[in-house]
Length: 137
Image (cartoon, rainbow, N blue to C red; front, side, top):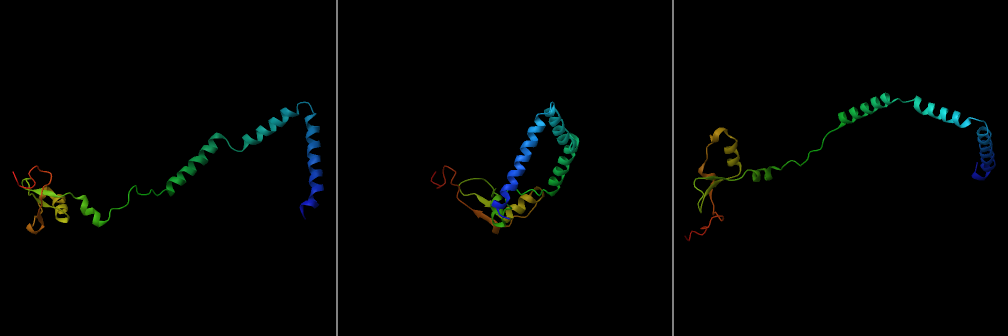
């Protein structure tokens, strides 16, 4: 059936509903009865406690399904060595000796610095933060 075939039926239905509403509105007190019926239907299904229980069940389900995302990505192994700062061995003069990388990490993680420091891991560097980094004074 196309829209043009349904038009007479829809017009008749619309006219019937409009006439019925006009007849009901002429009855004294019909607005009060209409409001009473409307309020009784909307209140009857859910009370405040029942809606609270449904809400808490939904919240509990969402919390159970929650898998928090990490705030930061895991650090790659190459970057982890940068997180361990170099350790200055001896006096911090213009040419200090430092221990860095994996040996420094092992040294800091051992109890009270008991790990052995092998001479091949010690590097001599220039301290550019000193006033006499060129050794002129």
